[in-house]
Image 1 (cartoon, rainbow, N blue to C red):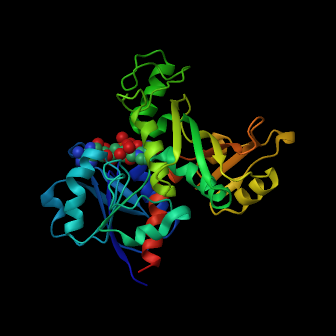
Image 2: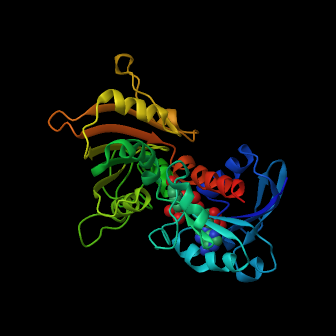
Length: 331
Ligand SMILES: NC(=O)c1ccc[n+]([C@@H]2O[C@H](COP(=O)([O-])OP(=O)(O)OC[C@H]3O[C@@H](n4cnc5c(N)ncnc54)[C@H](OP(=O)(O)O)[C@@H]3O)[C@@H](O)[C@H]2O)c1
């Protein structure tokens, strides 16, 4: 069996360390593993499958002369902009978690269960979508193929781990009454309708990611999309309320069947027994939990559903490793 040289960029972070966990769980055939992080982590070691790997400081001189097949990036957009091309020049395929390249025309933006074929046409870089976008693509694709999506509204309830270690630290600190170091307000006991910077149009960067990335992944360039993104004081797993309007009129039975049969979705909808998707059900899993599925009371073309997934796993690391698995299978 062929083995691959794999680099993790941002290996000490929440997403980077989960890359390693998922690579081990999926038993990806690794020949050499290179763990990159910032100068702050110089001297640290990362334990992977019982072996210690030293952190390599991300600098040109530490990258060149290495033979790398795949590089998984999760060290922020600026790092990706500066270093992705260095790895590509060395012959690596980069799977990038940041937003740096997502909307570039020649960069595939991939959720494997929805549009993996586009990944096979990559030019050295594949983008992993935004976490809250990823989890909404499977349920929308399941229904779009049958009823043709026309209009979608997202309302998100996003965990603090979506901001990396800084978000988790702020939740802990503000729960003890300390001043927030990262969010503009205490996240403890508050919901902040503010993720990413505010833009000229009144939306936030996170909201515009959901708008633009949904159109690109589902390949519906004129899709009407709106989003309100809210940070909530929970540690892990994002929840999203999706309101989707279709050209054709769906029946509740068809909607349930299509969601149940779609790869990566677990339908959790038994309201008589108080069973619906919850953050602590999704945490640690790579599945997308969908429930509270209802037809709109006043417009029979609208479906409402509540969708929950682990933002660090399916929303970032696992989605990227699933892309890697498919690239390997397709070689
Ligand atoms: N958290 C999520 O749910 C999520 C979901 C999707 C995408 N993402 C994206 O993934 C990226 C990382 O997120 P995270 O949550 O893992 O953040 P994090 O926990 O704060 O980790 C950041 C990682 O980047 C490294 N890094 C920072 N600056 C660097 C530099 N100049 N050179 C080399 N390495 C550097 C850090 O290394 P040091 O420890 O040495 O500083 C650390 O390994 C971001 O682009 C984020 O938008 C996150």
